[in-house]
Length: 187
Image (cartoon, rainbow, N blue to C red; front, side):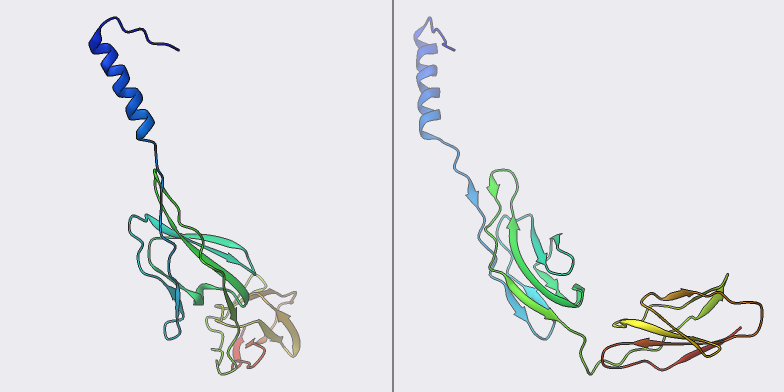
């Protein structure tokens, strides 16, 4: 497409636009990569804020691979499930500001500590042949006893095929290292 100028002012304007386009090219800005460190006391990954970042993305591989968008400059590792995880972080830009490069991978293994004692299950309830209780943090499963019949469950409930009568239900939380105290419910 050609523009035909009929007067000198139009010609000078056209030359000015062409010079502007030639020497003022779009130069994208890339954000700095976060400098991540591990705070042992708080069990968090932390970094200093990156100038002009609108937030941060954390990519987690292992267990359930997932990606989180956060505004803070830290990530609590206690949010991770048991297992080995690789994490990396990048600063996010907006519009003409490009995202930073990813940090290196940080590898973490989340294990149940042998010194952690399990709480006993609470709020036992038996309704419509379902025995339920509140989940116990760090429990890997539950042992349920219904009048001396032993069952196991990884959930915080179990459906029982029982007839009318009096039952003595017992539930305890299980882990690799410790079991909780037994809780009893009579119905």
